[in-house]
Length: 358
Image (cartoon, rainbow, N blue to C red; front, side, top):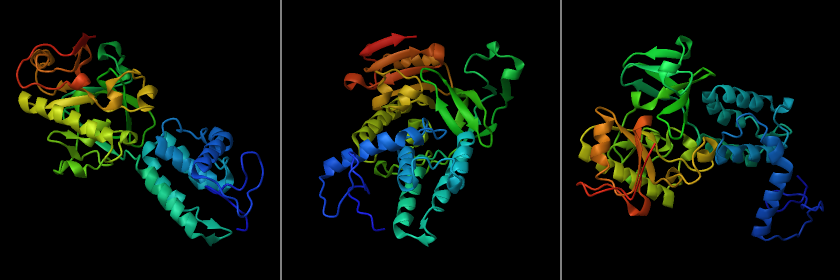
């Protein structure tokens, strides 16, 4: 285009001077330039887009990349009406965010000429955007239960604050938000803007569970099994932002915690449900989790027996777990973590490394 640029397309240095042909810059300095420019000239405007605080780093990166091309104030500008509309709709109806990839591909021209560089950029942005897509999740009630206006006992809710659901009833959810330290979760239904609280032990995900090898874990597929009994959805609590990088240390830690769950499930010989698992930062902080929570490192899991007595499950398990053990029966679950190398013991072997109650 006849304009000298350097690094990631910088035409001016942070001090205001223009880039000249022949300039040379070290990669580390280029990275610093990029950070300064994004923080000073882009972040304050782009972060005003509705839903920004809920987006993971990948979707935030996509919007910053788009703004780098078309200006930090593109949102709400007439020329960018299509992407503005889909972002507004997605904020109200999360399933609409799935349309962002197609809308990005509308912006591949300069002066009515398709530019291969923009085609490639929009394609990369679309693929990255979809890595945080939760899709539509279907849950089936295990027993008669309630949808609630608040995550509290139904006895404290008025008739208008709860809706009855029969056993086997199906709900289609576009977003599920974990409530740390609770067996409830917030859900938003497909095609609706309001949120309802559900009691997680009363629901199960409707999914297919084709067996796969552990090295083929697809973190974008909530129905993909991890080990014998758990799914990606249960590990990530149906939040694609939490997906670890394949081959990373955190992935290995999560697989180890899943193996501990498998050992418990095999020994208990009955179904066990999950109300909380991996909760990385900043998601842990955003939803009110403790700064020192073991869930952040993937070494903790909160579980309950699907059938049978939670008291009986506790009495059986507390003698067989050597890590951290939180007795949250009053909340409907048991917290386990693998601190100090702790884990499941096949036979009763004393008390856990750390034991506390609520």
